[in-house]
Amino acid sequence: MDNISLKAYAKVNLSLDILARRDDGYHELCMIMQSVGVYDKVNLTKLRQKDIKISSNIKNLCLPENNIVYKAAKLLYERFDIKEGLHINLYKYIPMGAGMAGGSTDAAAVLRGMNELYNLRLSKEELMKIGLEIGADVPFCICGGTMLAKGIGEELSELKAMPNAHLLLVKPYFSISTKEAYSLVDLSKLTDKDRPDTGKIISYIEEGNLKKIAENMKNVFELYIGKKYPLIEKIKQELIRQGALGAVMTGSGSVVFGVFEDLTLAKKCYETFKQGEFRAEIKEVYISEFIKGGL
Image (cartoon, rainbow, N blue to C red; front, side, top):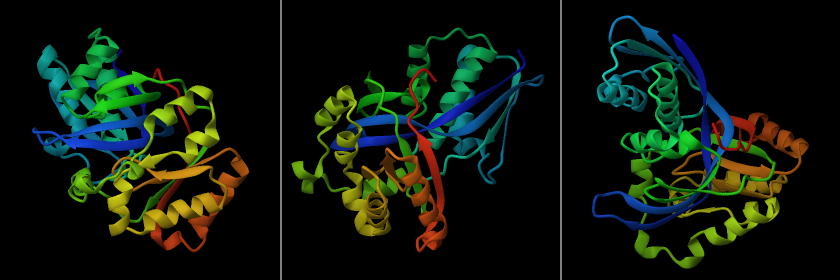
Protein backbone atom coordinates (compact mmCIF):
# COMPACT_ATOMS: atom_id res chain seq x y z
CA MET A 1 0.00 0.00 0.00
CA ASP A 2 1.48 3.35 -1.08
CA ASN A 3 -1.41 5.71 -0.27
CA ILE A 4 -4.52 5.95 1.84
CA SER A 5 -7.45 8.39 2.02
CA LEU A 6 -9.39 9.11 5.22
CA LYS A 7 -12.28 11.22 6.41
CA ALA A 8 -11.49 13.30 9.50
CA TYR A 9 -14.83 14.00 11.19
CA ALA A 10 -15.48 17.13 13.25
CA LYS A 11 -16.93 17.09 16.75
CA VAL A 12 -19.42 19.16 18.72
CA ASN A 13 -20.03 19.39 22.46
CA LEU A 14 -23.49 18.54 23.75
CA SER A 15 -22.27 19.81 27.12
CA LEU A 16 -19.10 21.45 28.39
CA ASP A 17 -18.27 22.22 32.01
CA ILE A 18 -15.01 23.67 33.34
CA LEU A 19 -14.44 22.30 36.84
CA ALA A 20 -11.09 23.78 37.88
CA ARG A 21 -7.76 25.13 36.70
CA ARG A 22 -4.90 22.69 37.27
CA ASP A 23 -1.42 23.50 38.52
CA ASP A 24 0.01 22.63 35.08
CA GLY A 25 -2.12 25.33 33.44
CA TYR A 26 -4.67 22.95 31.92
CA HIS A 27 -8.32 22.84 33.03
CA GLU A 28 -10.33 19.95 34.46
CA LEU A 29 -13.32 19.43 32.19
CA CYS A 30 -16.49 17.38 32.10
CA MET A 31 -18.20 17.26 28.72
CA ILE A 32 -20.10 15.16 26.21
CA MET A 33 -18.37 15.04 22.84
CA GLN A 34 -20.08 13.94 19.64
CA SER A 35 -18.83 13.25 16.11
CA VAL A 36 -20.70 15.00 13.29
CA GLY A 37 -20.81 14.55 9.53
CA VAL A 38 -18.68 17.56 8.57
CA TYR A 39 -15.22 16.27 7.68
CA ASP A 40 -11.84 17.09 6.20
CA LYS A 41 -10.26 14.81 3.60
CA VAL A 42 -6.80 13.54 4.51
CA ASN A 43 -4.72 11.81 1.83
CA LEU A 44 -1.40 10.16 2.74
CA THR A 45 1.13 9.07 0.11
CA LYS A 46 4.51 7.43 0.68
CA LEU A 47 7.59 9.23 -0.66
CA ARG A 48 10.99 7.73 -1.47
CA GLN A 49 12.97 10.44 0.30
CA LYS A 50 12.64 10.63 4.09
CA ASP A 51 10.70 13.86 4.41
CA ILE A 52 7.26 15.03 5.56
CA LYS A 53 5.51 17.31 3.08
CA ILE A 54 2.11 18.95 3.61
CA SER A 55 -0.18 20.53 1.04
CA SER A 56 -3.66 21.96 1.51
CA ASN A 57 -6.45 23.94 -0.09
CA ILE A 58 -5.96 26.49 2.73
CA LYS A 59 -3.10 28.98 2.42
CA ASN A 60 -0.71 29.44 5.37
CA LEU A 61 -1.78 26.09 6.85
CA CYS A 62 1.37 24.17 6.06
CA LEU A 63 4.05 25.70 8.30
CA PRO A 64 5.48 22.53 9.92
CA GLU A 65 6.42 23.99 13.31
CA ASN A 66 2.88 25.22 13.97
CA ASN A 67 0.96 22.37 12.36
CA ILE A 68 -0.55 19.69 14.58
CA VAL A 69 -0.72 17.33 11.59
CA TYR A 70 3.02 17.64 11.04
CA LYS A 71 3.62 17.02 14.74
CA ALA A 72 1.55 13.82 14.58
CA ALA A 73 3.47 12.48 11.59
CA LYS A 74 6.86 13.48 13.03
CA LEU A 75 6.08 11.75 16.33
CA LEU A 76 5.37 8.41 14.62
CA TYR A 77 8.41 8.79 12.35
CA GLU A 78 10.75 9.27 15.27
CA ARG A 79 9.18 6.69 17.56
CA PHE A 80 9.07 3.88 15.00
CA ASP A 81 12.09 4.87 12.90
CA ILE A 82 10.14 4.99 9.65
CA LYS A 83 12.55 5.17 6.71
CA GLU A 84 10.24 6.38 3.91
CA GLY A 85 8.87 9.88 3.42
CA LEU A 86 5.24 11.03 3.52
CA HIS A 87 3.12 13.55 1.62
CA ILE A 88 0.05 14.72 3.54
CA ASN A 89 -2.65 16.43 1.51
CA LEU A 90 -5.40 18.12 3.53
CA TYR A 91 -8.65 19.29 2.02
CA LYS A 92 -10.25 21.43 4.71
CA TYR A 93 -14.02 21.68 5.11
CA ILE A 94 -14.14 22.03 8.90
CA PRO A 95 -13.92 25.74 9.80
CA MET A 96 -10.94 26.86 11.85
CA GLY A 97 -11.31 28.62 15.21
CA ALA A 98 -14.73 27.04 15.49
CA GLY A 99 -14.61 24.65 18.47
CA MET A 100 -15.01 21.61 16.19
CA ALA A 101 -11.54 20.05 16.68
CA GLY A 102 -10.55 20.56 13.04
CA GLY A 103 -6.82 20.32 13.71
CA SER A 104 -7.13 17.49 16.22
CA THR A 105 -9.24 15.34 13.92
CA ASP A 106 -6.76 15.82 11.06
CA ALA A 107 -3.93 14.75 13.38
CA ALA A 108 -5.98 11.72 14.47
CA ALA A 109 -6.54 10.77 10.82
CA VAL A 110 -2.79 10.98 10.16
CA LEU A 111 -2.11 8.66 13.11
CA ARG A 112 -4.74 6.18 11.93
CA GLY A 113 -3.58 6.39 8.33
CA MET A 114 0.14 5.98 9.10
CA ASN A 115 -0.69 3.02 11.31
CA GLU A 116 -2.15 1.26 8.26
CA LEU A 117 0.25 2.65 5.64
CA TYR A 118 3.37 1.52 7.50
CA ASN A 119 1.81 -1.56 9.12
CA LEU A 120 2.64 -0.36 12.66
CA ARG A 121 -0.07 -2.62 14.14
CA LEU A 122 -0.93 -0.18 16.92
CA SER A 123 -4.19 -0.78 18.77
CA LYS A 124 -6.80 1.95 19.11
CA GLU A 125 -5.78 2.38 22.75
CA GLU A 126 -2.12 2.79 21.77
CA LEU A 127 -3.04 5.35 19.12
CA MET A 128 -5.11 7.28 21.66
CA LYS A 129 -2.19 7.34 24.10
CA ILE A 130 0.11 8.69 21.39
CA GLY A 131 -2.59 11.16 20.33
CA LEU A 132 -2.72 12.66 23.82
CA GLU A 133 0.91 13.70 23.42
CA ILE A 134 -0.21 15.86 20.48
CA GLY A 135 -3.45 17.36 21.80
CA ALA A 136 -6.22 16.78 24.35
CA ASP A 137 -8.96 16.26 21.72
CA VAL A 138 -6.94 13.83 19.58
CA PRO A 139 -7.86 10.67 21.58
CA PHE A 140 -11.56 11.38 21.10
CA CYS A 141 -11.05 12.04 17.39
CA ILE A 142 -9.36 8.66 17.03
CA CYS A 143 -12.40 6.76 18.33
CA GLY A 144 -15.30 9.16 17.64
CA GLY A 145 -18.96 8.57 18.40
CA THR A 146 -20.61 9.76 21.61
CA MET A 147 -18.30 10.06 24.62
CA LEU A 148 -18.21 11.44 28.14
CA ALA A 149 -14.85 13.19 28.45
CA LYS A 150 -13.17 14.15 31.73
CA GLY A 151 -9.72 15.32 32.82
CA ILE A 152 -8.38 17.57 30.06
CA GLY A 153 -10.55 15.57 27.67
CA GLU A 154 -8.53 12.37 27.58
CA GLU A 155 -10.57 10.30 30.10
CA LEU A 156 -13.18 8.88 27.73
CA SER A 157 -16.24 6.75 28.48
CA GLU A 158 -18.38 5.51 25.61
CA LEU A 159 -22.06 6.45 25.74
CA LYS A 160 -25.05 5.08 23.88
CA ALA A 161 -25.23 6.41 20.32
CA MET A 162 -27.25 9.58 19.84
CA PRO A 163 -30.68 9.29 18.23
CA ASN A 164 -30.88 10.41 14.60
CA ALA A 165 -31.20 14.15 14.09
CA HIS A 166 -30.48 16.94 11.64
CA LEU A 167 -27.97 19.57 12.68
CA LEU A 168 -27.51 23.11 11.48
CA LEU A 169 -24.03 24.43 12.25
CA VAL A 170 -23.47 28.18 11.95
CA LYS A 171 -19.99 29.73 11.81
CA PRO A 172 -19.97 33.50 12.50
CA TYR A 173 -17.58 35.84 10.69
CA PHE A 174 -15.18 35.70 13.66
CA SER A 175 -13.08 32.86 15.08
CA ILE A 176 -12.13 32.26 18.71
CA SER A 177 -8.86 30.66 19.78
CA THR A 178 -8.86 28.29 22.75
CA LYS A 179 -6.38 30.60 24.49
CA GLU A 180 -8.70 33.59 24.10
CA ALA A 181 -11.71 31.60 25.31
CA TYR A 182 -10.02 30.47 28.53
CA SER A 183 -8.70 33.98 29.17
CA LEU A 184 -12.30 35.20 29.42
CA VAL A 185 -13.38 32.57 31.98
CA ASP A 186 -13.72 33.44 35.68
CA LEU A 187 -14.46 30.19 37.52
CA SER A 188 -15.08 32.00 40.81
CA LYS A 189 -18.28 33.47 39.36
CA LEU A 190 -19.74 30.23 38.00
CA THR A 191 -22.86 28.96 39.79
CA ASP A 192 -24.60 25.59 39.53
CA LYS A 193 -27.22 27.27 37.34
CA ASP A 194 -24.51 28.20 34.84
CA ARG A 195 -23.27 24.62 34.53
CA PRO A 196 -24.75 21.80 32.43
CA ASP A 197 -26.38 18.86 34.20
CA THR A 198 -24.25 16.32 32.38
CA GLY A 199 -25.70 13.38 34.30
CA LYS A 200 -29.20 14.34 33.24
CA ILE A 201 -28.15 14.64 29.60
CA ILE A 202 -26.56 11.18 29.75
CA SER A 203 -29.81 9.73 31.11
CA TYR A 204 -31.71 11.28 28.20
CA ILE A 205 -29.16 9.82 25.78
CA GLU A 206 -29.79 6.40 27.33
CA GLU A 207 -33.53 6.95 26.81
CA GLY A 208 -33.02 8.17 23.23
CA ASN A 209 -34.97 11.34 24.10
CA LEU A 210 -33.71 13.80 21.50
CA LYS A 211 -35.95 16.66 22.64
CA LYS A 212 -34.73 16.53 26.24
CA ILE A 213 -31.10 16.16 25.18
CA ALA A 214 -31.36 19.26 22.99
CA GLU A 215 -33.22 21.29 25.61
CA ASN A 216 -30.52 20.60 28.23
CA MET A 217 -27.41 21.26 26.12
CA LYS A 218 -25.17 23.83 27.80
CA ASN A 219 -21.62 25.18 27.47
CA VAL A 220 -20.12 27.30 30.26
CA PHE A 221 -17.90 29.14 27.75
CA GLU A 222 -21.04 30.85 26.43
CA LEU A 223 -21.46 32.81 29.64
CA TYR A 224 -18.19 34.63 28.96
CA ILE A 225 -17.78 34.51 25.20
CA GLY A 226 -21.36 35.66 24.71
CA LYS A 227 -20.59 38.92 26.52
CA LYS A 228 -17.80 39.74 24.08
CA TYR A 229 -19.60 38.34 21.04
CA PRO A 230 -23.38 38.88 21.40
CA LEU A 231 -23.91 37.36 17.95
CA ILE A 232 -23.54 33.92 19.59
CA GLU A 233 -26.80 34.38 21.51
CA LYS A 234 -28.53 35.91 18.48
CA ILE A 235 -27.71 32.82 16.42
CA LYS A 236 -28.95 30.51 19.19
CA GLN A 237 -32.24 32.33 19.49
CA GLU A 238 -32.78 32.34 15.72
CA LEU A 239 -32.14 28.59 15.52
CA ILE A 240 -34.72 27.95 18.25
CA ARG A 241 -37.18 30.42 16.72
CA GLN A 242 -37.00 28.46 13.48
CA GLY A 243 -37.73 25.10 15.05
CA ALA A 244 -34.52 23.75 16.61
CA LEU A 245 -35.19 21.64 19.70
CA GLY A 246 -32.17 23.29 21.29
CA ALA A 247 -29.01 25.18 20.35
CA VAL A 248 -25.58 25.65 21.91
CA MET A 249 -22.08 26.86 21.09
CA THR A 250 -19.57 24.04 20.64
CA GLY A 251 -16.19 23.88 22.36
CA SER A 252 -14.52 27.23 22.85
CA GLY A 253 -16.47 28.62 19.88
CA SER A 254 -17.35 30.15 17.59
CA VAL A 255 -19.70 27.68 15.86
CA VAL A 256 -23.25 27.43 17.20
CA PHE A 257 -25.40 24.45 16.26
CA GLY A 258 -29.09 23.63 16.48
CA VAL A 259 -30.68 20.18 16.68
CA PHE A 260 -33.69 19.56 14.42
CA GLU A 261 -36.06 16.62 14.07
CA ASP A 262 -37.47 17.99 10.81
CA LEU A 263 -35.08 18.29 7.85
CA THR A 264 -37.43 20.73 6.11
CA LEU A 265 -37.15 23.14 9.05
CA ALA A 266 -33.38 22.76 9.09
CA LYS A 267 -33.18 23.58 5.37
CA LYS A 268 -35.44 26.62 5.80
CA CYS A 269 -33.24 27.85 8.65
CA TYR A 270 -30.16 27.26 6.49
CA GLU A 271 -31.54 29.67 3.90
CA THR A 272 -32.19 32.30 6.58
CA PHE A 273 -28.55 32.32 7.57
CA LYS A 274 -27.27 32.13 3.99
CA GLN A 275 -29.60 34.66 2.40
CA GLY A 276 -31.48 36.51 5.15
CA GLU A 277 -30.64 39.29 7.59
CA PHE A 278 -27.76 37.31 9.12
CA ARG A 279 -25.83 36.77 5.90
CA ALA A 280 -23.38 39.63 6.46
CA GLU A 281 -22.44 38.24 9.90
CA ILE A 282 -22.15 34.57 8.95
CA LYS A 283 -19.16 32.95 7.25
CA GLU A 284 -20.35 29.36 6.79
CA VAL A 285 -23.46 27.23 7.40
CA TYR A 286 -23.66 23.43 7.30
CA ILE A 287 -26.47 20.89 7.47
CA SER A 288 -25.15 17.71 9.06
CA GLU A 289 -25.95 14.80 11.36
CA PHE A 290 -24.55 12.84 14.30
CA ILE A 291 -21.95 10.17 13.42
CA LYS A 292 -21.58 6.93 15.34
CA GLY A 293 -18.23 5.64 16.63
CA GLY A 294 -15.75 3.30 15.01
CA LEU A 295 -14.29 5.92 12.65
